[in-house]
Amino acid sequence: MISCGIDIGGTFVKILATSEEGKVLRNQKIKTPYHLSSSKFLDFLADIINNFKKELKTKNIVIGVGVAGDTDNKKGILRFAPNIPWPNLRIAEGLTKRTNCNCFVSNDANMAAFGVYKKELKEKYKNILVFTLGTGIGGGIIIEGKLYQGSTGTAGEFGHIKIGDAKTGNLCGCGARGCLESFIGTNTLKKLTVQEVKKNPKSILAQLVKEEGFSVKLLSDAASKKDKFALSLWDYFGTYLGYAVTDLILIFNPEVVVFSGGVAGGAKYFMPALLKILKTQKIKEPFRNIKLLVSKTKDVGALGAALYALSVNNEK
Ligand SMILES: [Zn+2]
Image (cartoon, rainbow, N blue to C red):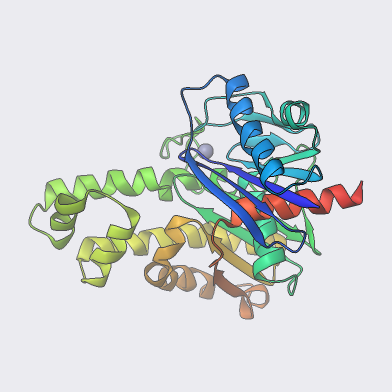
């Protein structure tokens, strides 16, 4: 059996085909085609899957899809997504009709969590929280070796737990105020950086922004050159992420917390502030031996989706 894993994000769609053991056989990355209608978008995905079938000379393919939004994992529907233009997209039904293959759908961070659990941690730990750090902040929960998706498939929306005041806090892309994502999502980091560059046009940070434009990597580069603002921005990032991590550790009492996604590359700079928050907790035990890891697996969301599809398909 071959599995096709698809990760639909606000910027890119990643599609790969794997063996049952998770060996990657085919891999594609395409800019999210915003201009397509929902039906044409499904045609586009189905064409790629049908091509994989031909190239790999198999009819026996199962499909797993992780999508950046609120999903109904039982019916395979994308219900709501702030960064993707196809609300109420019936992904599983649409792809099965076009490819004749079983298709399973979940939230992209859930799929990343499944990929981290299976491929990266090799099932060594059974209680795991995974944060995906990027434009959006996502989360996935593994409890006793099983992906926990909740009653409606919404479990793990770490980015929208309220870290600030829900009435007056920062406005989030989801429409609410005070969400974690509105504090540490990439758009906010960019906004804070632009404000700072206007204030201090001669700083190291301003110089770097002028040369290469804003990126999260640039914030790490500026921090490595001891730019004061970049260091303080990572400190702020680690502090607010730390508030969310401590709350979730108190709720789930995991063995491991894993950070994945582009911004996790800044761990060297945000981890000290995060650890400080963890160390000041009064209930000590759940924090004593907690492991904080940064995911190193490439395309862990698409890979996780492929492994998830195999796992759910085997249960059926
Ligand atoms: Zn929100």
